[in-house]
Amino acid sequence: MHTASFRILSVKEMEEFGVRVGKALTAGDVVVLRGELGAGKTTFARGVGLALGIHEVTSPTFVISKIYPGATPLIHVDAYRLIGSDLALFDDLDLEARIPKSITLIEWGSGFAQRLEDEPINIAIDFGETVDERIVTVEGLDL
Ligand SMILES: Nc1ncnc2c1ncn2[C@@H]1O[C@H](COP(=O)(O)OP(=O)(O)OP(=O)(O)O)[C@@H](O)[C@H]1O
Ligand SMILES: [Mg+2]
Image (cartoon, rainbow, N blue to C red; front, top):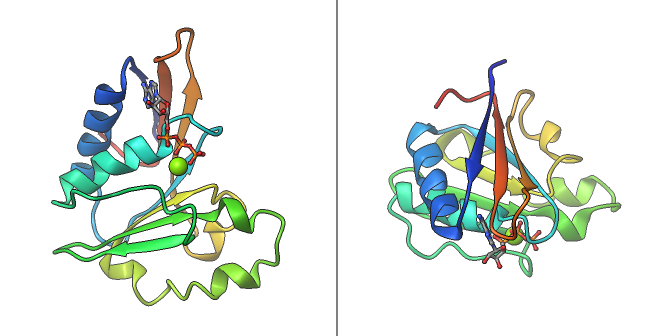
């Protein structure tokens, strides 16, 4: 599948890039967001939310999964605390029924996403050469 990389130079650009991706996503899409702590996954997710008219996307670290209602709901999962645990815990989130009608973003979901979607869209955020630079690689979505 098509892969493209984008150079992002600020928090604002990352949020705007999230908006761009959000506009390209449709209901049923599952996006796996990869990147180290502080790479910008939640910043990007905030932009995706804005594209859907959702203005309050914040890190779901303490609840694992948040569902924002809307014309197309946004499901935002942070699976960090599930790493290394039984995959059945992920099933307990009970997301299957909601996914076809929603856009789903999963942070730290590499180990779990296949349970929800055979061919997720993969987005990787890597640190660049300066503090604010990031390289975003998108696989499985044409922008
Ligand atoms: N170009 C950039 N894009 C995104 N964030 C940036 C950028 N430059 C600097 N930052 C900073 O990096 C941090 C990114 O935080 P964010 O919560 O989005 O990361 P995260 O990948 O979700 O982290 P975690 O794994 O802890 O959930 C913020 O403090 C932000 O200000
Ligand atoms: Mg985060």
